[in-house]
Structure formats: structure tokens, C-alpha cells
Amino acid sequence: MKEGIFYVLGFDIGGTKIAICLGTSDGKIIASTRVGNKDKDPNVVLPNLVKKGNELLSDNNLTTKDIKAIGIAAPAPHDVKKGIILNPANMPLWRNVKIKEYLENNFNIPVFFENDANAGALAEWFFGAGDNVQNMIYLTMSTGIGGGIICNGELVQGTSFDAGEIGHTVIDIDGPECQCGLKGCYEAFCGGRALALRLQNELKNEPENAIVKAAGSVDKIDMIALEKAVRDKDEYALKVWDNMILRNAQAIGGLVNIFNPDVIVLGTLPWATGDLFMKPFMEYLPRFCWEKSIEKVKITVSVLGRSIGEYAGVCVALNGLLASKNKKGEL
Image (tube, rainbow, N blue to C red; front, side, top):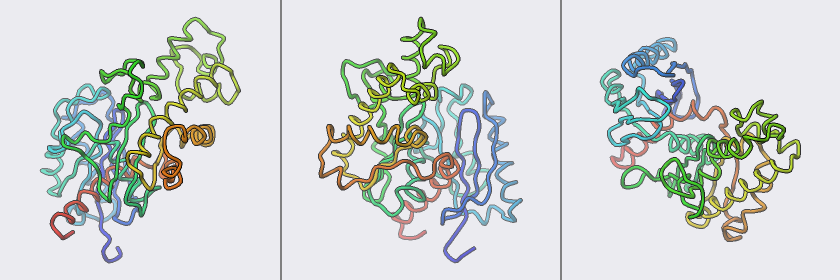
């Protein structure tokens, strides 16, 4: 280990699996493992996390004394300050789980806890497309739309640790209802789940539609089926895709003008579809923000791609240590 470089452990909590990663402060993932979490009781999962974490250390000739911190990337809703996972929709048995306290007690190492979208932002900021910048916005654009904001070299968390909920910015007061309870949210127009449900409803009596055929059946329509129909030049699919791109440009254009960032990193859908998304998006963007701001910002897809989950927990740990250093003057 080079001088000044140290080890951290990261836990990325998901509804079907939990990634446990051993990483270094210079961005290397030394080793990783997975723990199943689909419909699992946290009383069973938490001891397994400790067991697998210790095995990861042992397999690499390390002990807890070699680890400087642990980071947890967790889905909402949660209590970030206390490190409690409250009641995520895709984790029905996880209710008020004090995961931060549990890992602290079992590893005796400082543990830091963060929203999973913010953790993704930290990963891209430390070791991805936002490396070496002070102002960056990250969007994860998948089932829903989440975000993380780095401003003047610090993660923006907000008064109640709810900052970065970009997907729940209302962009049309007459728009569709969002699962969050608001109406016309960005996510309600562009989130994968919301768009899939809309298409399933609109195409329920059209079995010959190209999107339905790509999916196999109406109830299996998803963004992959939409993308395939778009690439096949289906007229209806092209119209839906174009409107989705326009709404993305509207929402992200607002971010460009509000934050004037160095970099905006787009994850998942733009990363997976490339120019099919990015080319029309960049053409629409000037309708929603100033040209001078567009000239200053670099808008790019995720560098870490599918690996971002491995880096998420690791970078929560690193950012926790960085924040402690900034407050206390020592790392």
C-alpha cells in the first residue's frame, strides 16, 4: 500500500442484493462480494453482512484495524443522520433498520450513511466523470430519476437531508400524477416505471404495436422494448421517445441555469443508449437554458457505468472522512 493510501469498506443496499466492496482511497476496488436480499429479513441479512465483510478482509490478509471507514449507500426513505433504513418499497421486511449502528457495533469502525443517488454522485465525483471538478450534478435515470449535487466541492444534503430529489421537480402542473404524491413531476414523465405503465395502458388493446411485440406482451413493456421500437423507426415509439427527450431537456436545462455546474453526469438510460438519447437531447437543450451556460458545462454519460454500485458505498466512506477532515482539520 502506497503512503497516504488507505482501505475502506462499502455496502450498497439493494432490494435484491447487497454489494460489499473493499476499496482504496485512490479508487481501486480490491475485492467484492454479494449478499442476497430479495424478501429477506434484515435480522438474517445484517449478521450475514458482517460475516461476508470480515471474510472479504480475511481473504485479502486484512483485519478491521486496516480499514479506516465504512460507507453505506441505501435506498429511500431513510434517516440519513441516524443511519436508519425506514421502509423502502422494494424491501418490504426492512422497517426502521438501524444499519449504521449495527455495523459500527460489529466492526468498531466509523460508519457513514448516504442516500443511494447521492452515493452515485459521490462515486462519479471521486473516480468518474466529475473527477477534479468543484461543481457537478449526477442523475440516475432508470426506474425512477434520482440525483446528487456537488457544490463548491461538497455534497449538498439540505436541511432534512432530502436535497437532490431532482426527479420530483414539478415541470408541468397539469402533468400526470407521480407516485410521490405530486402532479407533473419530472420522474412522472421520464422515469422508466412511470413511462412503462403509461405505455402499458395506452397499448393494452394494440397487440400488433411494435413496442408490444418488442416486449413480448403488454404487461412486459419496459424501456428496453421502447428503445428497440425506436431503433426500428416505429412512428409511435419515435413520438414517445422524442417527448421523453424533450422533457429531460426541460428538467436538466433548469439545472444548468440554477447551478451553473462544471459537469452534469447522466447515468443509466443515456449511458446505455448513447447518441440515441444524447444527440436529440443536446439539440433540445438550448430551448431551456442559456447558451453561455451550455458553453461552460460538460454534459456527459456516466464513466463508471454498471460499476457505479461497487464504488457507491466506498465513496460514501471516503466522503465521510473528507467531511470530517474539513471540519476537524485532520484525516
